[in-house]
Length: 100
Image 1 (cartoon, rainbow, N blue to C red):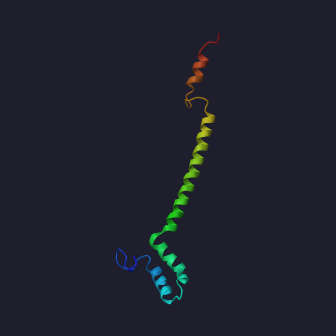
Image 2 (cartoon, rainbow, N blue to C red; image 1 turned 45 degrees about the horizontal axis):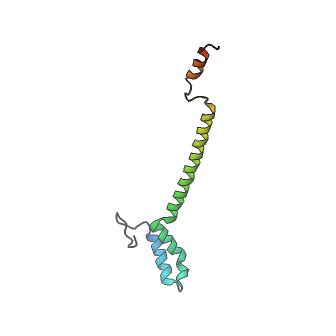
Image 3 (cartoon, helix red, strand yellow; image 1 turned 90 degrees about the vertical axis):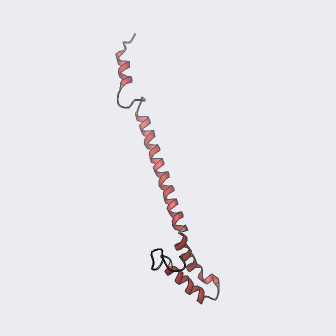
């Protein structure tokens, strides 16, 4: 909050950034001199870079786990020769029939 007061009283989390930006703005001759303090303050308020970084990490994690799961699924499908895992019912029924 730009007022400097947090939700529970005291200073807000961005008050120090606001002070830096305000001090720079009051001393600057040109507005472009205060771009970095302004960006720091806006990032503290809205956390846009932090959110985009977290979303990128999450998407990379999801693609990595999807690839791993697909590999495990393909591995399981290639190791099993029937639809029934480990029971061997299909193999026993073929052995029980006499060959003619």
